[in-house]
Amino acid sequence: VGVLDPATNVFSVVDISATVPGSWKYQGGALAPNGKVYFVPRSINNVGVFDPSTNAFSTVDISAFVTGNGKYNGAVLAPNGKIYFTPRNRDNVGVFDPATNAFTIINIPDSFGINGTSKFAGGVLAPNGKIYFAPWDSNSFGILDPSTDAFSLVDISAFKTVKNKYWGGVLAPNGTIVFVPVMMKIVGVVDPGNSAPAYRVSGGVPQEWRALLSPHFNKY
Image (cartoon, rainbow, N blue to C red; front, side):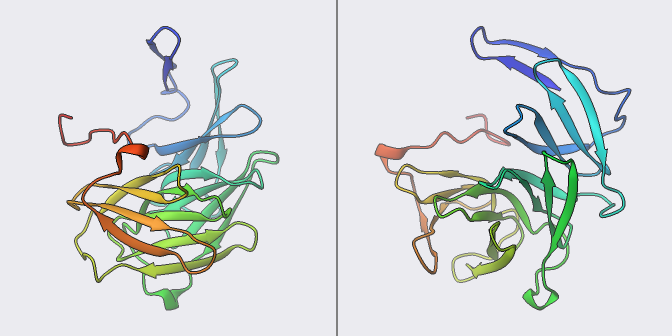
């Protein structure tokens, strides 16, 4: 586990190879109210648990619910205290309760027509309490309401149908969500609103709420 001290900019590592050997273990994580960090399982069959106060690392087995590669990609802490895993190759949203270490799933209906691989990459909690999943290969962004477990989609195929569209997003000060582009040449902007969310594309981010986008393939 990589550890950066913002006060000193000192970087260190906590070795977890004895507990979870191999590659492509986790992808993303979330800080829970109990102060622990929970890592999202990608190709490993457990949730990683890191306690920053002691540097202790442990795991919670979830193989009874999901197995395989590329399970989830990113996590969001909801107002109910639970952590929601963004579905990548799994046809469900993973739900982890830090208070009990219980793992459950919310199935995505087959009728939605998005079941398969590489659906979403990362998510953002909106002011309305719902979670918005950034479209990776999917031509829709996903919406989950943690208060009801209801899952829905908003089609964006009229804008672009390329793969590897966005990876994660940022909540802007005005309440809109900005999806971070990968293969898209433009950012995606979602306005959750009070009813049906609106989606638009933008060539840039307004100066007054500029977001910092971390480089992946780019050098800047």
